[in-house]
Image (cartoon, rainbow, N blue to C red):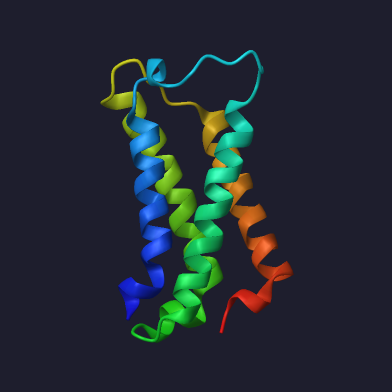
Length: 123
C-alpha cells in the first residue's frame, strides 16, 4: 500500500535525479536568462506536494501519515541539498550552487501551500 500511494512522488524524485545528473549540454540552449531557479522551484514544489499526498494516503506507517507535511518537506529539502552536493563532488561539468538549494527549499514551501489550498487531494 505504501508504494502504490507514493509511486508518483518516488518516480518524480527519480526524474529529478536523472535531470540533475545529466551534463548541461544535454539541455537545449535558451535565450531566457534565469530560467534555472524557477525550474528548481517547480520541480521541488511538485515533489513536496506529491509526497504529502502519498504520505497522507498510505496506512502502513501511522507516524508518516500523521506528520506527512513536515516529513515530506524535510525529505525534499534534504534530497535537494544532497543532489547539489553530489553535483559538486562527483559529476563532471556540474557544480553545487547554494542558490539552487534555496530555490529547492522555496519550491518545498510552495508545494506545502498548494497542498493547503487543495486539501481535496487527500482522501
